[in-house]
Image (cartoon, rainbow, N blue to C red; front, side):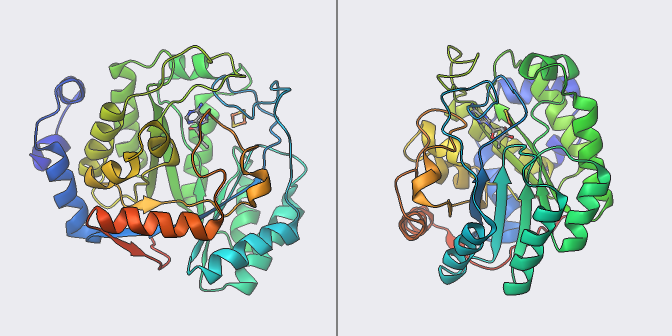
Length: 336
Ligand code: 5AD
Ligand code: FES
């Protein structure tokens, strides 16, 4: 079945999404196990600012949301999150933020450089939106290893329905190709069940992913946020998210695939089910508990009250109870 999926054209992929075979998850697990075994890699997520100059219609920290309680972490606060993570055994730190110009290139590079100096055995991942090639180059030179930038949807018309007119799919793609070319391990991805998304759009996403061949793919269900224009749209479904995780695992066998917090939010066992569908990464939150609720991309987000150590312990239980092992190494992607 896996060979067949690798050779599918647009029409066949559409049919696969609409009518997934019964053994899809089993096949996806086989592919993952062949490359990564039962390891689930842990990444410490630090949500360092929820200021954002963008106004994406789906996102709770969009600039028009006057109800968001805005915060910024200082360099020292970020470093102290890393210290907590390092003590817990983590070897990857993910710095994620809204597009906040306060963190100019000098400040970002200082932060990256300092983390890499203190923890040379750790990988630093940045998830900080669209920047110029030059800025990405500076992040790389400061020591950043990886960059997460979901493409959100590979269909230009659909992209326009999710974003204000200043943002374009064309620039998003340019950023992803720049990042790859600069030698970052790159993560793309999209929301499942975002407003106006059709199965045809999802086929565009799958074909774009095979073309980009990223090191990582982040997908999770869309979940409405009460203070956004998309407040009344339904959330993405568990079944569709799991089906797509499995299809992506089969199409990009060596990709790193997180079982996302959003998946854990729509179902209490969502992340465990993600592992059963071929996912192999989790990103527990290292942000200070005091700011967690404020980093609200969607309603009902889990893990906003727990200390980092509690999340780590909780995830360990979930990983082991689902027949996997928590892996604390850097967990670099096997994608060349
Ligand atoms: N529901 C689910 N995911 C969301 N994201 C942003 N808003 C939402 C939402 N309402 C995702 C986007 C973004 C990532 C950081 O979070 O895909 O790239
Ligand atoms: Fe900032 Fe969505 S509004 S990423």
